[in-house]
Image (cartoon, rainbow, N blue to C red):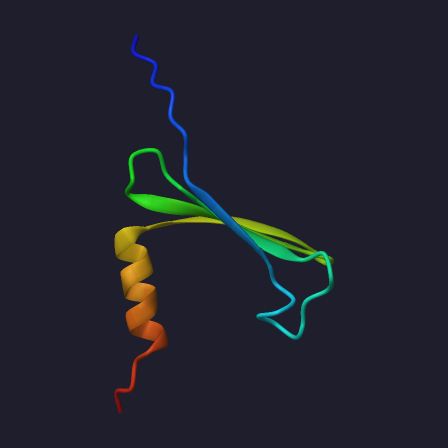
Length: 71
């Protein structure tokens, strides 16, 4: 059995200055996967928290869909 230990890169910010719907203690934290292929996202709000994961490909498609200008 092989066991690897890694230090995962994580970034954190309070939501208040980005979202007027947020409360004072709401925050988002994004942690890169150890294999570098995606992220774990944690959004913590007064009403509850959400945790989900995205691969780089899923993130890329989400950006395409959000910015879609088609007709």
